Amino acid sequence: MSLPLGRQERSSEQPSLLCLRKNLSGENGIIAIPVQLRRAAISRFSPLQFALNDSPTVSDRYTLSFEKFDGTLSTPVVREIVDRGHAVAVLPFDPATGKVLLIRQFLAGAYAAGVDPWPLQTIAGMIDTSESAADTALREAEEETGLKIPAGSLRPGPVYLVSPGAFTEIVHVFHVEIDLSDAGGVHGLASESEDIRSGILLLDDALAELRNGSVPPSLTLIALLDLKLHLLSQVA
Picture 1 (cartoon, helix red, strand yellow):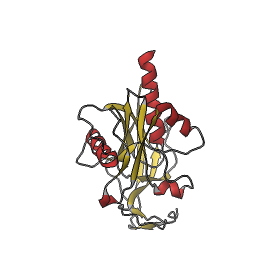
Picture 2 (cartoon, helix red, strand yellow; picture 1 turned 60 degrees about the vertical axis):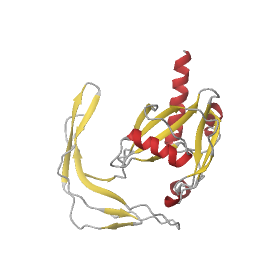
Picture 3 (cartoon, one colour; picture 1 turned 120 degrees about the vertical axis):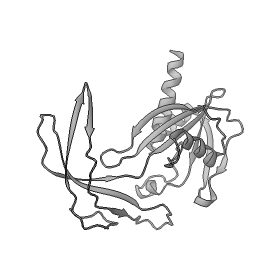
Picture 4 (cartoon, one colour; picture 1 turned 180 degrees about the vertical axis):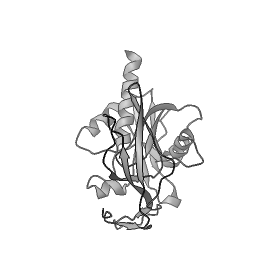
């Protein structure tokens, strides 16, 4: 199997054959993954002509078999798993006005996909290994928007897999009710060359914008819809 464009083999070691079996409990399938996995380390280098300072994404390429629903093992297949860590999304909401705070910043992945590289999105960021998801949410909110969210005021929302066909990334969505009357402006860490503009708009206007042909990050859509469902449940 040839390497995708922009990737470079860093190990000639052949990946081992793994057998993944599932233990079914009720309607939930639990997959037990063997501990000893042989890694063929691959680095991803961006073909974009931008100064990207993030560390190369390291992925694991496995040859594996998995247990099928009829109890037999599949034929060996090759799968590449990309592990870039986990992330949070934060959606501030002002219950007095019915407005939410969303941001726009340049996203290289959106540019490469051929869509608006400044999409409407929630506050978001990668979870540091020394932080909890909630601590990351509080830190990212202040860095990206200047909001100082009181500890303990976050309401956990959905936790979801971004693209589990290849990526291990899980996103933890958080909501917070907060006064947004003084929020807005341009923020971000100068040390990370961030240039992030916050905007305040009605929740329904934000949802309408996402239905008007824009291609938002999944975390934006999930956070907005979850907030709408939560509000509807309060009046039902």
